[in-house]
Length: 556
Image (cartoon, rainbow, N blue to C red):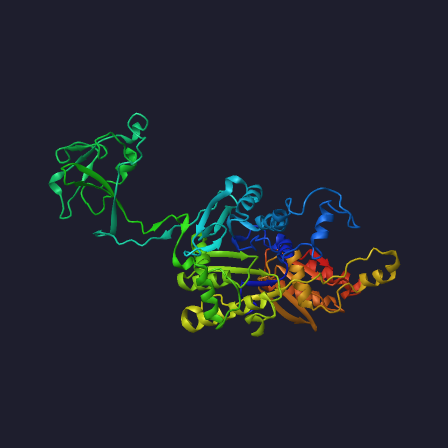
């Protein structure tokens, strides 16, 4: 996959600003969000929404100090600050992230003991208490790490759905079926309900007899059953537990009837078996090889040490401390979906991208990833810095490249059909000059309105800003043509044309109209640079485009 066809993204920049920019183009499009935010261990963290933030600035904002440093309140430094700084960082990001989730979307957040309670409180507010799914406990360090008075072996993953349309997938279970018929393997599951509170008095519709035909027993001891007593089915059994107390069935009578096939034990889902004590038991055939995901994940693939080992093997040395193991994130991806966009806006070393790529190669999924990472500087004394990596973002991008290379080498045929590319964007200020309201700079501001695109920006820079502000996906197909010597971009197979050249004429508009005719999109919009043509040519170009059914024409 190349730049023009890949649907995967890597974005360098403050995730808060990126999430703001995504509010149009990606609203309701994200299937799953996984984040492993910085844990609140009492140390400073790099995600500050005010980069001048420090203790003095915090005290000014909260009213503890005036601008001259005089204390205004009796609050101590520890009153609420330890938690509020972290929560103030997380809250707006989660609020914006919710808008990006699809109706059946879900978010998973890794966290430890320090903030799990507070994180759940703000998630209840943002996503709604009714949309809380569960709190998973992955065992990340079976040996335990020294933490206060208890050796902690686990972390938490809290998950919320956007709405009640989310449905997590079941996971495969390690099962070896003891029984087989012409339809395959199966387990036996007793049809009696094991809830001791249920009986014929409070569940009368679940209390009824089965009738058994003991004369057609097969080699496995299975007999056919009926809900009607007849000449063949004459042995009656009702639901009683091992103590002889009255119980009920798990199924109602109509469901039992639909699962009985009298003449063929293979086809029938309900069977009778005579136990050693001579009593008859009713069973169903259970062919399921999947089960609901459990709340505690204790597989070895969840261990943090595995994440460190995986990254060291990929790079040949240590480049990142405590990366999340891909086994953990792959499981999250598996129970979510095999397609859709998977976003991680605290991407770190790109464990999520690694997991998505590897899982797609294993189950032929079509998941896409978006990674967002602040280009946080790396400690100059670290192995990573000595290896040439200056920021965490550089490590993340290189990891994705190496994973893609491995997949191509190990699965050359399969990789041909996979999306094994990714686009990289760096967050920057707007390409358009902003208006300066200072009356002393009126002349300069007026000139800027004439030449309003910053001089160090390319047409491609402006193109992607227009996409974001137009609410379009950054991975839409983009085709480029030269029309009358001017560069014209076709985005989304004719849904948007952009020309940011100088000295545009109606011949350029004519060429765009012809190109639109080739694509035949349902809707079409054209964007020009405002000072790209004279008033006369602008009027003529607008009229030319209208002849081709293009009425939405804008200039910047």
